[in-house]
Every structure is written in structure tokens, then in C-alpha cells.
Length: 300
Image 1 (cartoon, helix red, strand yellow):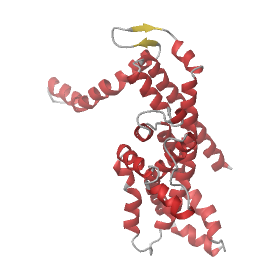
Image 2: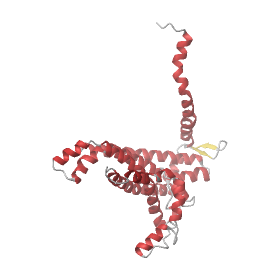
Image 3: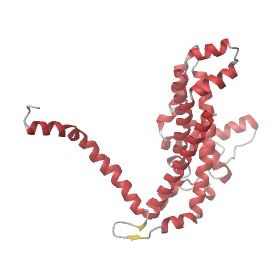
Image 4: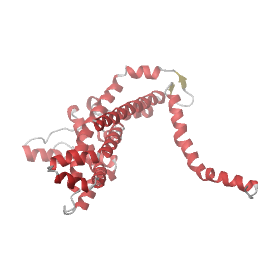
């Protein structure tokens, strides 16, 4: 039996909760309350605290027949598929090259490829808006130098070129970031596995297929899922590149941009909340499908 007085024992039991209380308070105020509030608002027509009307599933019913929303879904899906399909193989290729111990200046190259991610989407959007400028932009100048044409290419005002421009910009920004994950995964693969495979007569291609890919498979799944989630949350890049619009024929309109326009420009916070929860459903569904598919491939 403890000889400590009752108030000392009580204080000892409450001490951990006292230290946790600042975090729990912030977590409740800045995460739990907004989350619960957004669920409620998704079932209302809300233009402010004094202009809220409960509409039940009305927002979600309108969502299903809203052409602008489905246009944003299509654009975001195309961007996610295009960006992830390019970034992951490119990042893995760079990681394989920069993982060579005898490569001169590899630490400098690693930093050079990673640093675009530290700049931020807004600043990169401003830079690439200049690079995409017709006639004087670096991209058009390069196309003209290589192929003798392309000076008048309008990357950001031609509906057919807006999405390639966004994918190209995102690839430059995020490939180095994904490369770091692959570098860490490659360095964690047991070198003895490569030696054993080489003794068995496996060439470089077979070592890559049967040693490297299985060894980095958990990181690949993680990068695939997180990159897809990040692609579906795209907002700042097209918002700045396309001058706070969806671009020509709404070719660059994304789900989060449409949410922003609906909630903060049009003022319909209830419908914006419904768009947000629809995005959560899309991302959750796609993530579960990706995880399930990768588990199936691993079991086979």
C-alpha cells in the first residue's frame, strides 16, 4: 500500500493528462470541431452563421448532376494518372543512378533534384508562368531551337495544353522529393541478396526485377498512395498558373479549386463541404484499391 497522501497520488495520476492537455485542446479546436462542423454543413445550404438551412442530401443530389464538379473530377483524375505515372518511374531511375557509390558529385545532385520541393507551389507557379510565356518563354525558345517552331505555343491559354503544362510543372517539383524515398529504400536492400543473385548468374535486369523491386515494394506502395492523394489535393499550382481561374474551357479546374470557388468566392459553404467530403470518398476509395492491388501482386 502506498504511503503517499491521497492528493499526491491523485496529482501523480493526473500529471500525464495535464501535459497532454495543450495538444488535446488544440486537436479538438482545430481538427475535431472543424471536421464535425463540415459534416453538418454538408447537409445544409450555408451562406453564413445566420443564413443556414438544412437541406438533407440535397447538396449530394445536386453534386451528382453538377457538370462543373464532374469536369473537375475528370481533370483531377487525368492529372493524377499523368503526374504519378511519370514521377514514380523517373524518380526511381534517378534514385538508381544516384545510389551508385562511385558517382562523382552524387550528394550535390541529390540536393539539386530535391530542392524544387522546398520552394513551394506558389513560387514555382509564378516561375513557370514566365517559362510558358509565348515567344519569350524558355520552353518556347527551346522548342524553336530544337525543332524550328513553337515560339507562339500558348501553354496556358490553349485548352489542349493546359493539362500537359500542369503535369510538367508538377513533375519538376515533386520528382526529387519522391526520389529521396526511393534512395532510402534502395539503401535498405541487403547487399548480400545482390551478391547471391550475381553468383547464381542473374544479370542486371534480373537483379532489378527479383531483388530491387521486391526490396523496395513497401516504399513503392507508400509513395504511390501518398503521391495520388497529393495529386487529388492539387490547388495552388493551377490556381496561380491560370490566374485564379479554371483556365480555357475549365481545362485546369481541379476538385479543390472548385471547392474554393464554391465556398469562398460564391459563398456556398454547405455545397463546398459536400464537395470536400466527396473528395475524401474518392481519395479513400482509390487508396484502398491501390493498396489491395499491390497486395495482390505481392502475393502472386
